[in-house]
Image 1 (cartoon, one colour):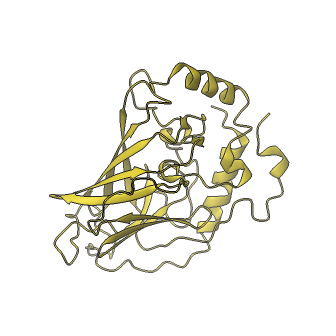
Image 2: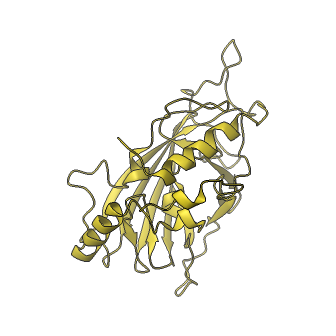
Image 3: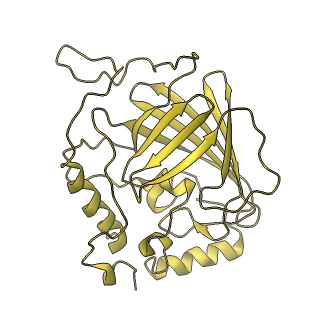
Length: 265
């Protein structure tokens, strides 16, 4: 398969850069006799007894800090509904828009112009993300463009009329061992994948974060956006822990010599 140049550039920038980061053992992870992280061990717990979601995570197959060759691109990065039978349930106008954007090889993709990717798309980007679980707050730091997202877990309600933003406004609550997050207040016109699947200001996103074990974090994402889709849809993103490493500073197109070719046809 031939990938759009913008996608190739993302991988070319991200993988070599990670080799520059010093390895440092992640504290609190069970290890075997060789000192390797035991990724199949039970999920760690925070001080309050809840599963600890903290860690550096990457969608799909683990790529070590020193980089990897032929890294398998997460399907959801190209199309968020790749795992859904029949694909995403687009409204007619949205289906036509995605067809047009695909034909243009993502020429108008906001991330190719260094705009924020938005909460959903950041979960599928090849560069990793770091979750920090704090009292009353979960923070998601993204290596791409050094962006952050806040999920308030202090019991506050969602605002009635939040200021529209790329990541929206998120609150979370624990139901047994699952963190359920509700997000509203998203900007109109976001892309959620490379295909250009749209998200509108009517969207409400529900995420269920569940740490299966040390090495795996399952995020079930449900999107209810009646403007863009004929019905709510759900996709599960399986994140893999990247132990003994951390995020790097990666700014969009920093020192990029091929900018003219990153925006499709």
